[in-house]
Image (cartoon, rainbow, N blue to C red; front, side, top):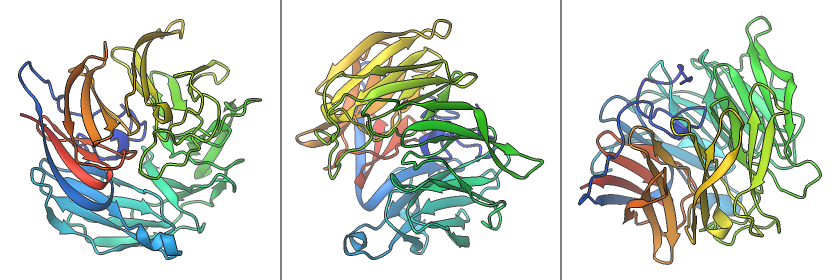
Length: 417
């Protein structure tokens, strides 16, 4: 697995790393056995976005403010080191400058420090949550997180569906730019992904990539790799891309009206789609509907279990979850199992060693966290997480047959009991 610039921990950044594989980098799965159930400890938060893991027992939580944005005022973020069992705060940063509101991102660099991009600011903190450096980013728009290239450089961009995305590359020590900003040919809503020193950008109608050049000390667009996934369709933009097994995987029809839940939040009349683009030849691609239902929409990435060659995608607006078996030789996707009336919307966790898939299921009583057998979709366990909103942000694995689930106003530790 690439991403050598991240701390060597089970979950040092969102989705476990910049390829967005949504699997722990080390450790084992929940390994649920007959008679075992899931327990849950929860706490209220401001707006929790994600947890990441440092050294054994270290769990860091990223939150941000929100109400100020309703009256046009800048918002802030905060990093907490929390108790891995009780979730209580051990220490926390001061309020970190932010600006325009959008859930940001956090990761632990191989140098041992924490980095946060939220609003239009980048921050560097030590592991005691003390600020070391800060930088205002050039565009007065929210920047939706970042990735760390294998060379250690931080790469971030503004979020917009109307103005072109502007990529900034930052020095991890000073947070100063190491090259001039790169302007993409189109806007971009999705978060960045990377593999090695290559950056992938999902624009509002096409996916493209940029390679870091040591000789010119900048990112250079790959002129031979590009996929216009919108084409002559009426689909809306794609979300975050997963880089696995020699392919890029993402979903479209990302425009929606989410407030507290994704169910029924689609705004485009068409079905949302799963998109595959080969990394060695962008002409090798496939685009297929997920549920086939009108008004389909998502706000997150699919998942590819490389060990089992299973791809999981969903239509959050229509409460639908589906898995396919992928043939790496023919590139055929064969339907494997599906679930109707299943309120999945969040980023997921896959445990390759145990074949367990962790997803959310939003019901009338609120959000529940569910563990499925990824091979056949069988439900292994579920627990009410306490969240009243349908989570659309980032979970992480834990240290001992547990995981952490963020759903905006609530953080939960889910554990085997």
